[in-house]
Length: 456
Image 1 (cartoon, rainbow, N blue to C red):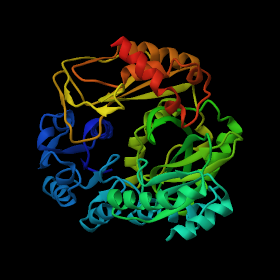
Image 2: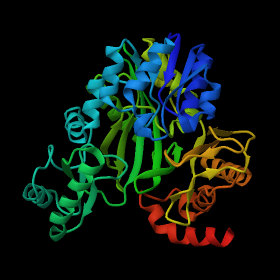
Image 3: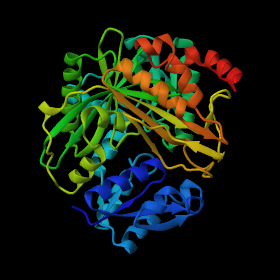
Image 4: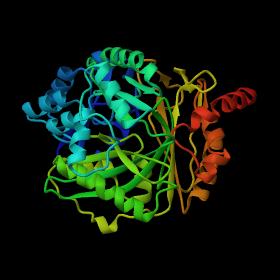
């Protein structure tokens, strides 16, 4: 086991990793920007090092400063969390060249799975179902049109290096393809420094289902079932749950086996997630692989009884997986709400500022992962996620009731948050019945916005 791990991140995930390290008997190093000098992760780590000014590009994305912080503190491993440098192949290579263990897969795997066109070809070779579309990068509008005619409209253009919905355009008819192609390339170039696109058949009314995998250095790979991630806006998840209300045991085994095949085909090692689109007929298609711990990992932990962050660290230390596939089945139900510092009545605009009053919910089956505290000032420089409220219960009905109770108890004053929006969503008939898809929030947003405005 490592003696000291540097956490190259901030916020609730940095604190989550620190807690896991402490329970493993591993010392921790926090890095922080000047605006995070009094943040919880800097307080609770054994050591902390300032790595730059508030802007992420000058601090949490500053590879040289982070490596230097690890070297001067004597850390022997770096955990990147999620976001920032978590899926940065160059950073993983830098860690290796400096004798530091990167807690995640190899740079080669990160690079291969980060290129969506290459990832799709890799999964196809592993006999993982993929959405019909181009074999790789589509260079011209004419080539895109030819493929679109073959797979039939609607189609979707996606940035090869994309994420978060950037460089993505849905095209429903031939006349719109040329303009959409040009706009998607420009957005991809601006957002990722890479204009390359690929094209796929657009799946109407899909659900977003992801499979959690764990793979050790001895070649053992298991899956820990699925997470339902269809409640999202602009391709950003808001509510996740495990298990999915529409995935039965047979489908779970089928999707899990496909995810394991895909991970095995690239020699995967660490915690990772294979993301799928599930159509209304029960067909599933590979979408992408996330080569890191996910924001929504707690719902899997709650129903499978496995600490995914600890397992990730143990795997990086060379330890074999101690859990068996036959032991992995869901026990009860868990739901997570992402609490963001955003104004849900104003198109989810970020709402940084000082928290003047806070009360966190508790009681049986309630978990809150957060780094905020009373008088904490939410900075404007980073992602707006400030807390994750996770509940678990015997079944989905009880979990929704518990979530309602916990949201009622959750007090956050001084800034706008998504708490009222979550209250609205989980009480809609569609959510209660489990009858929704990735377009659900588009359908209910105006009603939710109006109701929240009246309440406040």
